[in-house]
Image (tube, rainbow, N blue to C red):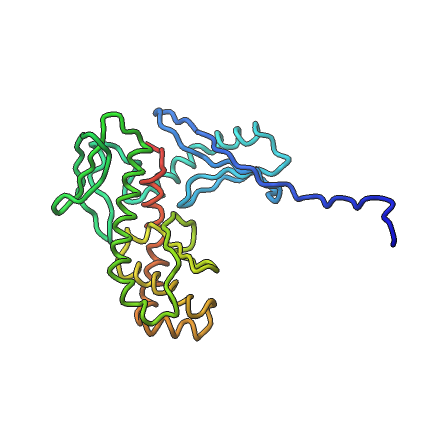
Length: 264
């Protein structure tokens, strides 16, 4: 038996991407959270913004001081872009100030009321947000997310039973998350994930995404056979796809603004 005289050299791991958050203070006292990403693949310092928020990318060789200086130099541009990405004037939830909320391609009037607990519920034709005197931003956004997820699951409860008889099995579970680019996904164990922002848009588009993911239980690919399954259950799917191309970014921005934005 041959013996190794020297142990094998360890394989060098590629440098990892590191992330943290920088809070940029503005002249009017408000702040913007900027995700700072040190990425060994980056070749230059870059500042960008999308529906996920502001992002400062630094190459490995760039110092934190360089990044801070770059951020300060471009703060006016960043403020302008943040405002441009604000969804229909939405900002983070503010008790007594936020007076409407999006739901199912509509805007519902919102009333605020102090109480013993924090929750959001329907109130006639509109919504009522009860909150304690000490409720902070985290408690408000948690209540809003719970409300939106409850509404989204109510939609699934109406639609899902009509599709299950034509499927080989049901999804093992359904979870709602804020997704960056996708609207839904199906895991190998048949667990389904849907973007919570779907409940903000028109219901027919939400139902199309559900049909799309359910059809992956039949065909795990995007072959012509898969699209025939989708077409049989949702003949207008092309219209819904066009809707997402046109309005999808707006929906994602609305949700992220309401749940996490700190620009005020």
